[in-house]
Image 1 (cartoon, rainbow, N blue to C red):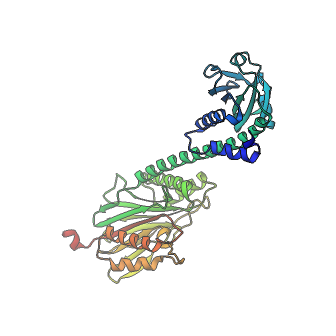
Image 2: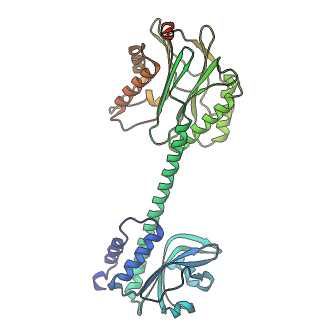
Image 3: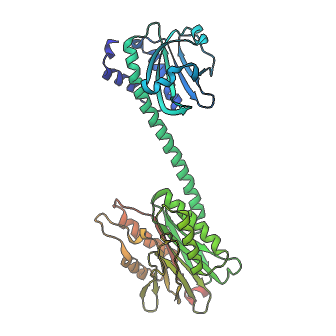
Amino acid sequence: MELYQTQRDVYKLVEKLVSGNFRNELSFLKTLVKEIVRHEEFEIIGGRVWELNVQEKCYELRYQYGKLSKIPTNYKLAIEDYPILSELYHKRTSLHQETDQLLKQKGIDIYSVAAVGDLIRVGQHYYFKYVLGFNAEHILQSFYETLNVISSVATVKLRDLAYNEIQKKIQRDINKASEIQRSLLPPHNVEFHDFDIFGVCIPDSEVGGDFFDYLRNKSDEEDRIGIVISDAASKGLPAAIQALFVSGAIRMAQSFSPKISSLLSRLNTLIFDTFPYERFVTLFYCELTLSSNRLVLYANAGHCAPIHFRFEDESFRFLKPTGGLLGLIREQSFSVENIRMKPNDILILYTDGITEAMDQNGNIFGENRICELVKKYKDETAKHIAYMIIEHVQKFNANSKYNDDKTIVVVKRRSLESISD
């Protein structure tokens, strides 16, 4: 044992033994026990892994290795028969004479144990999740001291493994949430009489807080179509959960054909009551109608002002908020405004991931660039315009450290000539 006589040497040795990848906690502890028993310097002839069984208040044998006679699989030691097990909460390691008759018959007279893993309360005492037991003809004092190092290193490794498992589970959950979120997005392209509509959503990560939807009421689906675009101000999973909630709530509410103002007021109260600790949600909702002048009714709950491009004079109008952010205060009202969409007019709905996209110097993309692109591609389809804007934003944002979800919906009223074609 001279080679590993210092604690630092022992630490390096044990750390080397536990290096590598392991499927789970038990696979790691099995490898550790096996390697310690096989190292001649320790002069250990047998080792075991015991796992706490909270329901039965015992430690259950999960693995054994060495020259001793085998203990029956899943053999149990009642914690009430081993007071030293509760003492490990303070000591972490212990050296004792064996008292269990079956273990003594198997050749275990003197054993040393090391507690590893998480602490779990059973009754009035705390117990470690795992106990490693080792025995030898003569357990050296130096090995007993080594157990403290083994306990420390093994516990750190177990925590790393547990953290990795949690990370994997979180990633699986995120992937599932991403699938659900993608499945709820509508088809990109929709045609509603002489309206050409195209939307696309590009989340910054697996899940995001942006969404858009096309809403039709079956009772009068030939007369109008609703379009909603929304952005949850929080990030990651909380934002995705809010987005899914808002999407489902507005679909359900819209099926009852409420007025736009009532729909947003009820949605605002729902968000306030459901997400008391989350941040707000912005939302823009509009309805395309088949009135002779193609009136578009809309309400804007603190969302980025959509851009209305009027083809006849190539001017732009911004559809500013008609009410506050959703979920910020419990009771609030929303007014409804309107615009007329003449042939070849274009309406651009977007989230702030478009206009606030930054380049590497901190400059933002802004509304003016959108207007320039709309003017440049005004004769193209809604799909082409949407993709041109997204492409320019992505290039502008390519070298920036800051990214956000990017969503855009383009609505274009086709000319009479294009419809007849």
